[in-house]
Length: 357
Image (cartoon, rainbow, N blue to C red; front, side, top):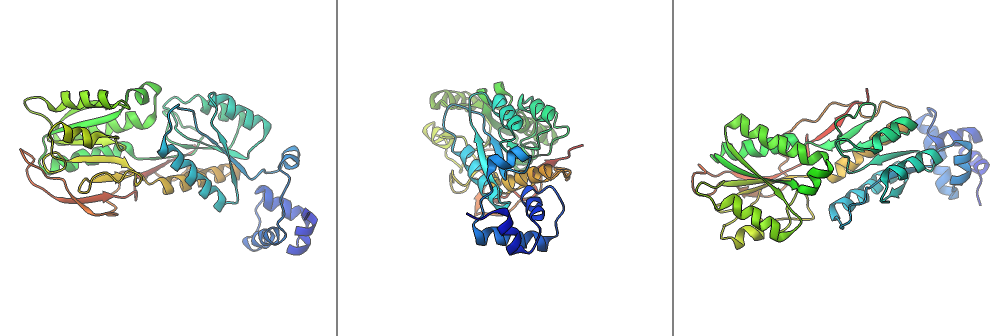
């Protein structure tokens, strides 16, 4: 089994230099760093994580806190998969924290130095994990934006900006009555940040354009969702277009069962949609750029671990269309005005990052 001394001899450096490269605690020239990493690969050197933790050295492990939510959520595990891929680009492995008590998990890992830093997923507006990492000085990046992110780098999809943009787009095509299918009751009750921000954005877009916005909440229960959709549309002057946050499972099927032709007479625009749910051809959407978000979160975590400024970048804003997919017709019948070819709107400009100061 190769030792750190073997790596140092092959790379032509001192053992302490190898240690500095492994710990990522000192500035090492790119040439020396690559020589050490190549020697590590050639010798298949595996540092002993436990021994390094005792010495206060880097573990090359990044903790990812994924609060338990009961039901399986494929989108959440897409984020975990892409976080793992992004971490491997930095030669880090993931330690998943999925217990019922996410606060205790984070505290245990930070105090025990079981990881060099963390990424917190599913961040709440008032997230109880945040005081823990602040108290312990644990290098952490947030995948989501709380109400008070002071001192912690964060990145998130611009739910507010994109929802506002979606409403403005539909109003621009002549839709004066727009329905907004917001996040679920549970997401609002738990304080998930994107639920409130998406709703705020839709209301902002309506204020900007003078459109009438009617809001319902989504539901994981098909029958509950169907009832809410019926009450939304079974009125004398119903909305002529809908905006949703994320892909609402079964929504298009419910609309068609209730006699609506989607998208011919009822356009549906999805904000923070994903490729896993391709939806219906012809429906425009703002795609959730999962790969870009996870790379950004890991980069911010690495900067925090190294003692850098983390998320000091400026916010991305609401951006423009990415044009990443085929076209779709946002028009429709009734008083929708006209039609226009729109497509998938990519993630460019739709990721926001927050400063650490």
